[in-house]
Amino acid sequence: MRKYYWKFMMAKCQQLDFYTKGEKGGAGYFVNYDPEGVNPFARTAPVLRAFWNKLTDYGNLWFEGRIASGPGDHQLVLSSDREAVAYCSSGTGDEDVRFESGMLELRDLAVADGEYIVEIVDPETGVSDTRSVSIGSGKADLMLPAFTDDIAVHVYR
Image (tube, rainbow, N blue to C red; front, side, top):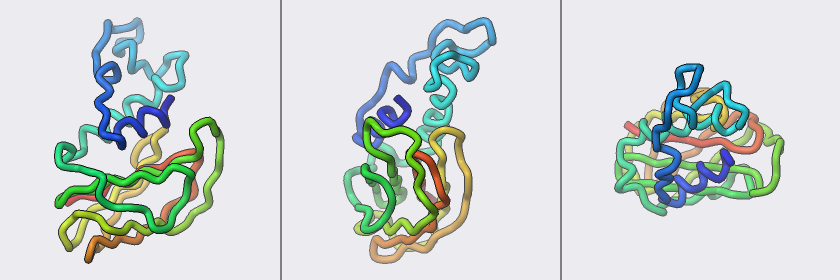
């Protein structure tokens, strides 16, 4: 389910049910965000919510940009003149697919030339690394760590 929700976001689909607040459960969490819940997605939903909340220009992010080289069967990119997001994942029905560390080559981004902050996000646990990158002519190259199933990259100022 986690990969589906991340792909929904990258497809510009609003997942209204994901952001609906429910009754507070016994642990004091909203039921649909309970990190102690029996549904594994309930433990990772706050990671997607935090990622979503950090996006500064989601309304203007569009299907501009591509992954020229990088991991995963699914490679999705959104960008605006101020921000870019990339998401790489294993195939839809695949689980526990391990990807080795490697270069992610982003091309044709809409972002303006300059220096940007990059957050590498493990969709299961959250931000795993923060660094800077220089983007020129819509190009950025980033070294990704090894990961399992999926990884996201947030580029912003």
